[in-house]
Length: 297
Image (tube, rainbow, N blue to C red; front, side, top):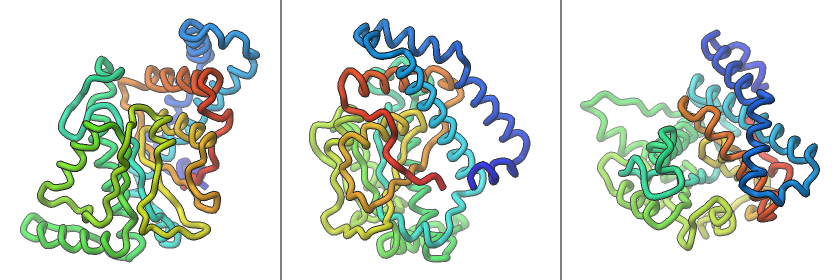
């Protein structure tokens, strides 16, 4: 279904997606990922080359799928069906480089131009997803002019409180504190009763997965969905770590809502995540070779 809808998108979007696909599946990029992975972790040479190449290729193909989904969601203003929107009970935000208030922070991404403001961008995206889910599930449209903005903020906050999914955030301590502060600002549409911030020692994606908990008052039923927000390359690695630890009930479905790769990181970011994927799969044993099953809509 996704491919058919993408084929009906304007030419400039389709050509851009085609360029992304061509860029990420170049043999030269795949060879570089393998070469750099060997340099970082020589013990990977004990793994069959075909196995490593398969993981890299499948990971890059998944990045492309998620990039297509991100373009599709933004271009068509998140065109979910009402039934699907009602099934989404929580939106989990994986923290990213920077914080809500800081373009960059002291981490391994601090020198990456493409990583600027990533955490803030994910938070903005998650709030948009929650708003659209609430609009679609209730059949309401929350638009306002400047003179009615405060009134509409109150209305959408009340609707999210009653009908919307939970906002769940997982990140390290300084990231969590920034989110808590931001949620206290004026005109925030996420009501406090729908906020759940995961606490604990969290400094990487493995720790994010291993510490995942859900709000105690959230009762999930078979067929319910949990949405996950992050940039597409990290979602690939997240899905395979999720497959290793499986923190969610098996009857609950996972649905990604990816952000597109920043233009300046189109090769560097996926390359970095694919090296990480090999490391977590074969060195750390924290990831499976195939992703956790999820829904692409």
